[in-house]
Amino acid sequence: MTDSTENHLEKIYEQRFSSREEYRRKVWQALVSGWFHRYIPADGAVLDLGCGYGEFINAVNVPVRYAMDLNPASKQHLDPGVCLFQQDCSQEWPLQDASLGLVFTSNFLEHLPSKASAEAALRQAWRCLRPGGRFIALGPNIKYLPGAYWDFWDHYLPITETSLAEGLQIAGFRMEKVIPRFLPYTMAGGRQYPVLFVRAYLRCRVVWPILGRQFLVIATK
Image (cartoon, rainbow, N blue to C red; front, side):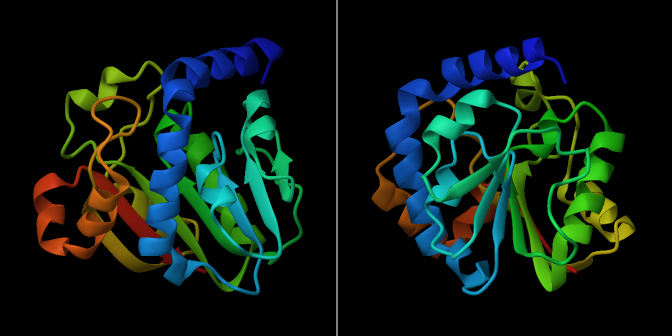
């Protein structure tokens, strides 16, 4: 990737998220404490793939935290204890085999330029996860967003929960949980609902099939 690509990413992040940083931070704290905490290994390293401004990895309390993103601005938003790998995720990760307990990614895979890049990233995740380690992916489900999915300039890959599950299985993973409709679509725009609503939504699973537009896929090595 060139410097111009990295600068392009920085401009997109700045335009899309800079005015909502504090809100996103609070929402992710609620998501981690209200749902994702059950999948975070207390004794294992965690990597936030496509970390953006680090809302997920900053909310995680584990001994070793990694983040990966091409955007050079990511570093200034990460906690001091988070190690950033500023690189293309389809290239070899600077981690040893079986060194991670969890790879988490949110609203990222659809931004990759090709299926080949996504497959390479999944293979790297499988290599770096320890046996029993998890890969968790949250993202917009094109099955339920056939038009709005393309409202973002940098969306390239159309992904459903089924296609991602198949890709993970090809990479060697076993499926643990596949939820086609988990969260509403996006925090990039629109109304900023009180964080209490987020916590209530997570507890009220009956509304997920109605309001959910993002899949949640959890796979195990």
